Image 1 (tube, rainbow, N blue to C red):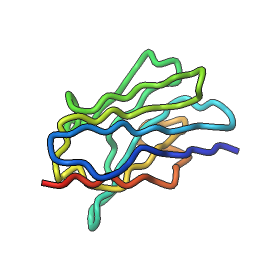
Image 2 (image 1 turned 30 degrees about the vertical axis):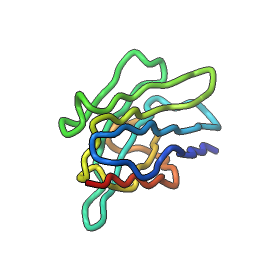
Image 3 (image 1 turned 120 degrees about the vertical axis):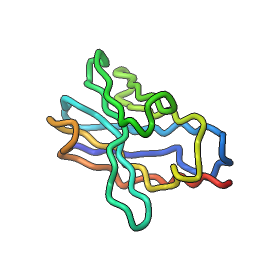
Length: 116
């Protein structure tokens, strides 16, 4: 059984930063990533990393502002988010699986709200 538990969301002013954490348990999977979903919008891929940490992948919308990383000793994946904008307001999900854009497992989500 794979479990993903996100934390670190909250309210931040535009231009600020947040770091999301995802504690993973169960068997190790190939890719870990982050998606988000804003009200009335489809889920959007943000970033992914392979478990060795040797490769990262980003959506154009967040490239240069968001950084994905992992701590294998802690079984935790992070998403550092800088220069946040009101348009980044969404529910952020941690994901894991054999494919980057079609993950097999999802966390429960953590809310990020960016005020203007």
